[in-house]
Image (cartoon, rainbow, N blue to C red; front, side, top):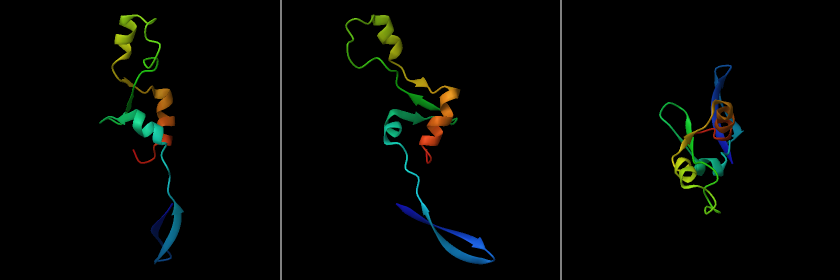
Length: 82
């Protein structure tokens, strides 16, 4: 997958063959970008073996959560066009 990028070098236009960046498909489906530039994600531990987990614990895992500041750089690096 390549993209052609034009740039000016010595007052002449040239075409340069650059490789496109591929985003991680898992992160595209698992996270959503917010209006202020953050990302929301779904909580873990709510897929299976739910009988031993308390109702309060499952209820608090239900809403989406924001990606922490420490992990935000990794998410942005994996999603170059988001």
